[in-house]
Image (cartoon, rainbow, N blue to C red; front, top):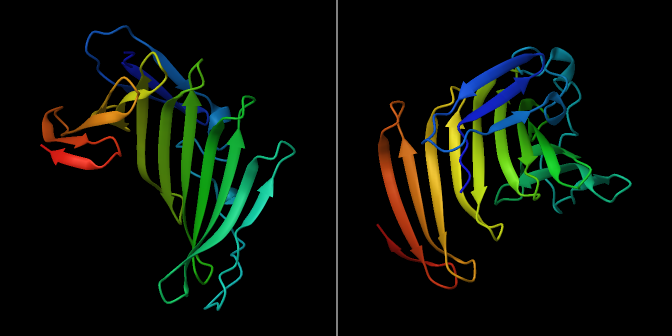
Length: 227
């Protein structure tokens, strides 16, 4: 199992270095470069004023028939943008979202940006998801950043993934912006690669386990036992 001890965030011109203490395993560095992160950010990684949407979507108060999502594809057929409403049970729009996607040369999605609006077109905020892949094409890093309507950072975390020799995920660790481990998931699989057990751990700021749950699954993926 590969374990990560250090990861680096490069946010625009300023680098944020976070040390994720390990367990004596070989040191490995994951570097997320500017090309994996939205370019229109300031030194703190926040959207610049030019990058905050100024054109709201068309206002829809209530519709008898829900409109289909608007989808834009590139020359390779990959979805680069999707615009759609979400709806309440009574059929009225809940909110309007604009999704933008970027891919690497292998076709892996490396960035996902979500702009969020109220149903009447008021900008609510933005979410940046950044993905990094290893040499085998498996997702190795996931970075999440969310901002409010003024461009202030709300939340930032990084998840790191490990796989077995068959390319199946067996562990996920999540760190906060200070490089502190906040959660870990261990996945146990049978000879067919099916998940038979998952162990969920949560940590406090001192690195102490504050929550420990174990779920057991049957062959259909149904939880049959919880510890």
